[in-house]
Length: 374
Image (cartoon, rainbow, N blue to C red):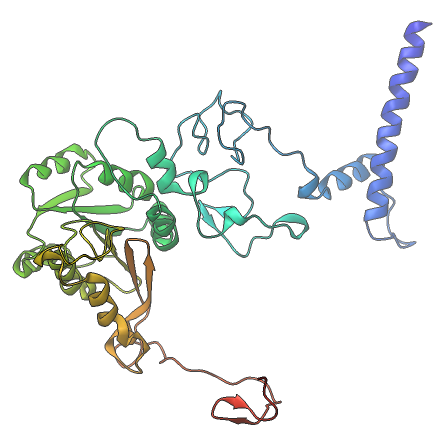
């Protein structure tokens, strides 16, 4: 008798569950016309499951070992290798698995989160688990030294992300870093950018040549040059007909930073990026200028770079034809080249402001006529 009651209870529970699913599917689906075929219970259940909104799906369980409060860790973490969880060791090339607005680690604005929700972590500044450079950096504790200001990582993701996509998609990306110190940053670029990266390390110190041998893939080359010597730059540029990215982390003095700007910006390919790291008015990043700084700090790279790019705002200037944008971050300058240069140098149309609409207010010297606020 007990067994019979148990069977009846199970049958009743299953029937109730099927009924709920069928009812849900019938209320969310369009009404059937008299000529429409009736749904079988199995078909109705399948339709209901298919129409379940993504927002109602149970999120993956967070790893108890993960220190990040918002870490999008996979359910297997930390038992299996996790691409985003610092507790498990991150993989630089893999994006967060549960962020529906990311593809290949890059935020896609055309992907919509369910229910009209949004997440500030999807937008600049991307940090920690959402930043492939910072993820690698945070998990690099042994081996070759690497030393970067952490506010650079969101800028790297913002301006270099397109090249990461290209590299992992099979296209070559040509990059150079000036000032490679202990070689750790070369390993970061190699890991994050992936198989398409063709990397140059530039340094005045001859001992850095060893880093070329350390990369057994053969995709890293070292060239020793004096940053302030134009002839050294010319010799190197002959070996690098195409350059997408150059990051100047070299001398950190006006003479060196000016020389890099003058000798390499024009050589960078359309769509490419030029960065100067560790810029300052004083003797180190973050320090103000002082009358006691000495002659090496008298001229300011901030002033020089602004004056050299000021013509971005001048019609038909060479700067406007070739430069898309200039960005200043704390201690960092970023210059992005246009994907297509403007005419007459290139094929893209000159900048223009185009009126749209039919209703216009009368204006006088740029101000709408009529009563004005005090």
